[in-house]
Length: 142
Image (cartoon, rainbow, N blue to C red; front, top):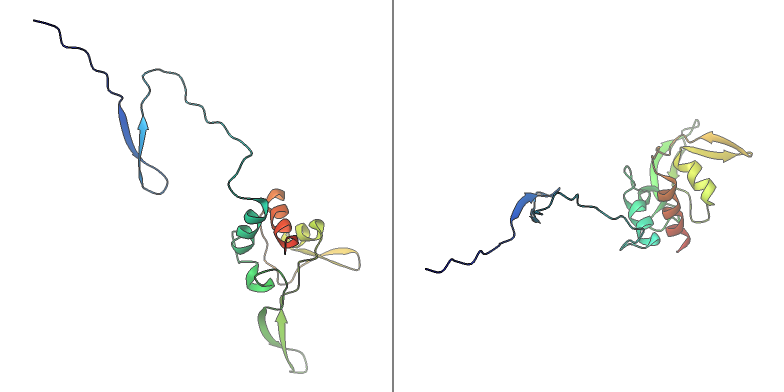
């Protein structure tokens, strides 16, 4: 009687990824570690990334106050001054902000008489310099 040929089949393991979707992982028969190579390449341009951050910056959307393209004019609140005159608070145009001024604003500061002061209305955002630069690039692309 002839011996049967030995057939080798790759082994697969099914696991759930972050989105609870089944993924198939090939199990290596060696003990060598699997390396992940990080590259600077991205499927998003800086402008696209900046737009995504502008729309959803881990907090209140910039567009809520500064409009879809940063030109301002969005109504934030209606209030009354000391003489009981109705006033409307609107978002300012941020398209011409320098990168330095945009960083300061996102840290909840603004310039008045060449001094940085705390915003009274602007929320604090905890964005990296790279993220702020992407938002700035998006605003300059308009």
